[in-house]
Length: 96
Image (cartoon, rainbow, N blue to C red):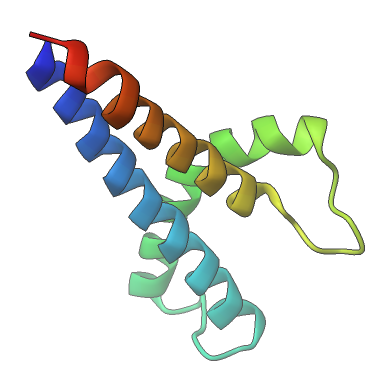
């Protein structure tokens, strides 16, 4: 059981990095630092978008964009943080 929880923690860490990449890429695209007409940029953006959009969409149903600012990445990161702390503090120490 302990290895399963550790794998879940690793997946949550990976997803945290994917969300950070999504935020940074969206800023770079919106400020025209990188161009989505480039095939490599388009492929990376599509992969990151496909990985993050289901979680963002679920949050956007509950919390709409306030003042044009999308808080869904922040909320997803907060949920990941809470899940990691819960698993590390309350589940992992008591698993044989």
